[in-house]
Amino acid sequence: MERRQRGVSAGLLLLLYQISQVGLQNIPSVTLGVLVLNIFLFLNPLRPLTEVCLSVNEAVHRKNWQRLLLAPFHHADDWHLYYNMISMLWKGIMLERKLKSIWFAYIIAVFSVLIGVVYIVLELLLVIILDDPSYEMNCGVGFSGVLFALKVLNNHYNPGRVSSVFGLPISSKYACWVELVAIHLISPGTSFAGHLSGILVGLMYTMGPLKKIMRACAAGISFFTEPDRPRDYYSEYYGYYPHYQYRTPRSYFDYTGGLTEEEQLERAVLNSLNERALNNLQHSRFWWKNTE
Image 1: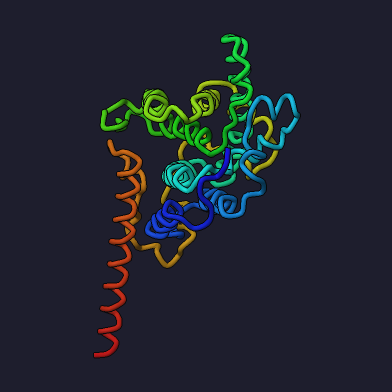
Image 2: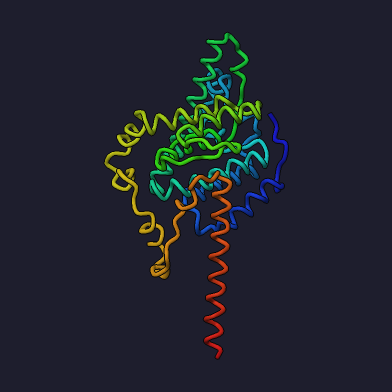
């Protein structure tokens, strides 16, 4: 596996443009950190892809367990990075505001490693069930497994929505499963086991014991706890900007009604542009009044 492109390229430029349109001030800190880390490692990979990708052969037989940490944050090319980070941008905005930055960072860290472990287990099961040792050599990189897990969380915390998967309206409860199969059929080269691992870890958190285990591990650290129920989004976000206290708050949750993630991101971009135009208009009015 070799990187097809390096350096500044179309996918990376488009990603940077989209981030700038949303506005750095509108992106929560952990989400922004994940974006920056992935972009940095794309431009400055720690090792070649063949030395960071995760497989049974490398992790189990050769004991290269550090790949559990390296594989999620490296990408094969600029478009692989673009699609993953655009998805991360929206999911991060949705989830980090609801779960608090510290808990969201905790989730990202645990999911990144645990999804790799589940991926190894699934590949080992395929080797045993199908009696095909070639599955030991399947080597994957990228953040998409974590994104599938975050999709499960997002659907859990925002139930009852309808998602569009390749133009088909699907209940958000089943959207990740339909997307899993559809992506594999359309692009067979993607890692089915890697994406499935993400869904399974997401279900382990929302329906299984993972959340309780994480809470137990974080017990006793007062600022390191998950909220028992969704908190008021506005009280957290606008508390950082006292001079905006009389401004009508803008809710990112208004963007989710039946829209795809791309449409949601486009709505956020347009909202950000409208806000900038309003600020410029107010500034020009203020300047005009003071020059009369």
